[in-house]
Amino acid sequence: MKEKDLEKLLKALANHRRLAMLRFIKKKKEANVGAIAEEIKLSFKSTSRHLSILIAINFLDKEQRSSEVFYKINTKIPELVRYLINFL
Image (tube, rainbow, N blue to C red; front, side, top):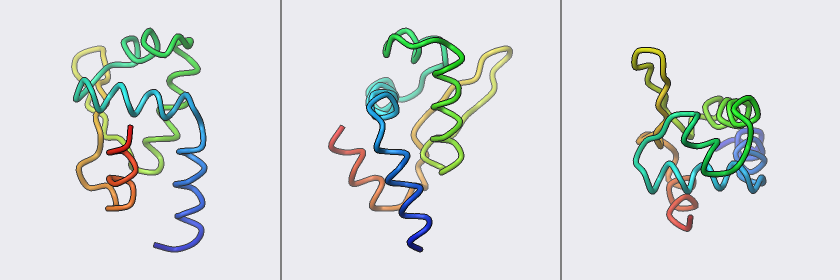
């Protein structure tokens, strides 16, 4: 893993709201934005922004179903990320 990639990964994990999102999604296996926002007590818009960051670094996969988008932990994440997520 390149230093720049590791830096992006660590920055994404260095936020308590994103960690809470990952913990919730890990527990539920998948969740939509509304459920995640309700769980972490954050607005829909702010939750979407945080999810975009996690999507950009491939921590999460998303699937469109009708008018909702569901998020789940990416099964192809680097081993380091998988190791860290196991602590959540």
